[in-house]
Image 1 (cartoon, rainbow, N blue to C red):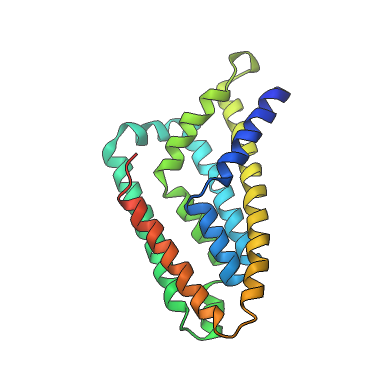
Image 2 (cartoon, rainbow, N blue to C red):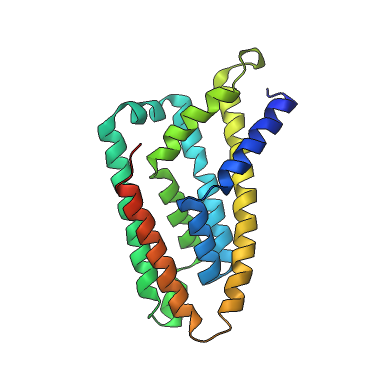
Length: 207
């Protein structure tokens, strides 16, 4: 089990880390601005729940393999970068699509799957977990795997809280901007360009 001070310290760390600019929070914000609160919340849920996979990887040692293998890290990183660029291109092109097509393309369910997949395909998150968890594990509090699972659940809750707040705020901004007839297409193009840029940055980033 986890002690109260252990829980509070980890929660504070998780919230601060969730607030740091990155592909996940930027994706949530762009979804909120271009599509509204429901899609942004779907993105927030996808990125948060995706951490279940990284928690599991950290527990069973897959993350350690990714950290140790430059080839595995590069393959997953490139796959994640290509996926972000692919999503960005689709959003960018949807700026000139019909409203019905755009609605189908950017359904909240699709947004959830996209964000969940993007989270899993980011090897830096996997390495981050195996670097973060040991700092909060206490040998006297029971089996390490159980503590890691509990910390992972806490991290998911904290990130969802932060991302949901960003989703609601950006959704409100998006609704305001969309009152102008020319805004929707431009917002989609801007969001697509941001995601393409994030994908390129991930592809050329180092560990």
